[in-house]
Image (cartoon, rainbow, N blue to C red; front, side, top):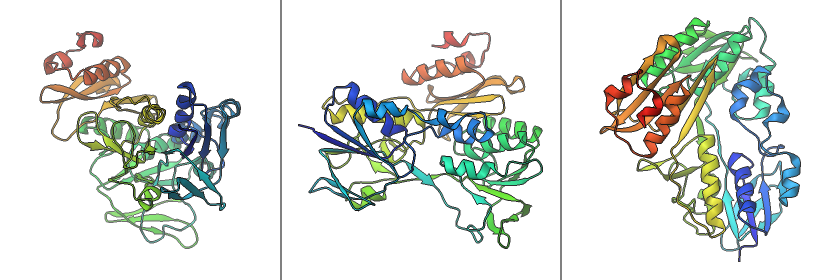
Amino acid sequence: MVERIVIIGAGQAGAQAIATLRAEGFEGSLTLIGDEAYPPYQRPPLSKAYLAGDFARERLFLKPDAFYAETGCELRLSLVATAIDRPRKTVGLSDGTKLSYDRLLLATGARVRQLPVPGAALAGVYYLRGIADVDALRQHFQPGTRLAIVGGGYIGLEVAAVAVKHGLKVTVIEAANRVMVRAASPQISAFYEKIHRANGVEFALGAMAERFEGDARAQGVSTNLGRVEADVILAGIGIVPNCELAEAAGLACDNGISVDEYGVTSDPDIFAAGDCTSHPGFAGGRVRLESVQNAIDQAKHAALAMVGKPLAYREVPWFWSDQYDLKLQIAGLARPGDRTVLRGNPETRKFSVFHLRDGVVAAVEAVNAAPDYIVGRRLIAARAMVAPERLQDISVPAKSLA
């Protein structure tokens, strides 16, 4: 009988697991361990509305304080899980205490990838992952401040969009020859680069950051293409899964903590969910997803398995990004060999790009085109085949595509 469940990680997956466990009738002891001082909160608004000052801190939190009292979940915050003793079924904490468990959920998430260049420790160099990071960065959001952003992915571009609205002089330094190279098709990349340039953002593409210049404070970034002057530097070059705790405990890891379709690790009493996991992908192979959708859905499935109600995780992955007045919504996982079909005209700031793999709809990227995104998700889930000409024809209503 499962009496004690311990969750390591106070993020989106951890909060969802608590809700699902109680909803499914689990009545035993429940403890959530978090290394920050805060209970679980949303991260997506951090680089957007919260950074802009349009989103109050209280709104970030996923659940009201009463939720944890009502669910009988003990919060152990500002503590790090230091070791898992699998034979004894205990978790050691940074305060020297140990917690016993019958089932353990690892929702350890991910951390920012550090940029290993000279000058990385200078004052004025920032990363963005948590509330404290945004609070520290936002103090520099004054008109005329020169901001260099290393990394042209979601985080970098979302921050750039907020920064130029506040009057900062922004330069995005990206090693690839286009922005969002890991997340979006060339058509989407070109569109967003054009939009950002029109709003005053400058780009150094194909530029590798080699050194952060400055004495006590950052004053610029030296790249293979020249120097970018800066008063503040933000490094946004991706995240790294937090799987060291699992590895030290002898759990199988492969670009994340390896789990099956039920969220079970190589130890049948230990489960994992969220950014920290590598799992069987919807379209085959193993994937590690960095998204709210995956954290929520995978946590639900792991919680079900923990209480003896296993249900295979087969959700279509989806992502989004808000930049200026543009909402980018993506469903599915694109691959380099996909055939892309443009639906609509980018000049109208409302269009989508469908990805076909062997004739089957594999992914969709929609800009201010929610109907295309919604229908695209259905087509991906159904592994539907749709003629490219039909996808391209905007006289065919999106809902008719399904």
